[in-house]
Image (cartoon, rainbow, N blue to C red; front, side, top):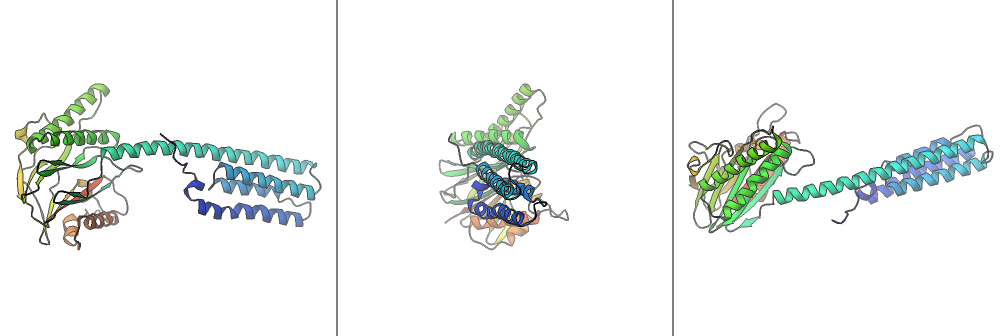
Length: 368
C-alpha cells in the first residue's frame, strides 16, 4: 500500500498555515526591533522562543525547525548589537533557544510520524468497513433506494447495525438488523449476518430458509467464539428480511424481533405490523418453521422505510423518544434520497447532535 499524505496541520490546510506563519514571523521581527531599541540591561531575546513554540502547534517539523533557526539568528543579531556574542548572558540565551527549538522540532516530527501511522490504520479500517457494509445501489430493477448509517462509536463508520440488498431471479431481497452489544464483537456478528445473507440470497433460498440459515450462522459463530475465548457472551440479532418482486405489488417479510417497517402510501403512513414476530437470530438452533412469512401490498409510488431501534430510541434533552411515524408523515418530498436526508438531519437535531446507539435507515421506493 502506498503512503497517503500525512495529515499534519500544514498538510490539512496549507493556505491557513501560510497565513498563520505571519504570527511567529511577526513575533521574531517585533522582538528583534524592540530589543535593539531598548537599553542593554533589558533582555527581550528569551521571548523569541514563542515563535517556534507557536509554529509547532499548526505546522510540520520542517517549518518548526525553520522558524526556530530564524529565531536563533535573531538572537545572534541582538547579542551582536548588545554587548557582543561572547558575553555569558547572550551565550546562555542562544544555547537555550537552540535547545528548545530542537526539542520542538523533534516533538513535531514524532507527532507527524504518529499521525502518519494513525492515518494508515484509519485507511485500513475504513476500507474494511466499506467492504463489510457496502453502499446500497440507488437503483435496482423497479426500486429506488437510499440509505444512511449513523454510528455511535467515535471515528467509526459502522457498528452493530447492518443492512444489505441482493438481486435474485425476478426480485430484490433486503436485510436490516441490529446486533446485540457494541464494539468489535458486534461488528464481527454483523459481518457474519451480511455474509450469510449474501450467500443464501444467491442460492435462491426461501425467506424462512434464509432466516434459519442466518440464525444458525450467528449461533455457530458465537459457539466457536466461546470455545476460543472461553468467556464469549452469547449474541443475537434482530432482523427484518424482505423479498420484493419486480412484477408483483406484494412484499414477503420475515420479522425476527425487529421494529416493523413503515409504509408510506397515498400520503399516509402506517406500521407494517405482523401477528407475532419470530425470535431474534441466534437464540436457538433454528429451522424454517420458526420463521413465518407475512405479506403486504407494495404498489407503485409507495415508499418503504426500514430502520433500526437506534432511530426510534433516540432521546432529546427531555428524554422523549424520536417520533419516527410523525416525522415521516410530516415529510414533504418525492424521492428516497430526500426522505433519508430529512430523517438524518431531523434525528441528529432531536438527539442533540450525537446518538447513544447505532442507527440505520433504508428507504425503498417502487417506481412505475
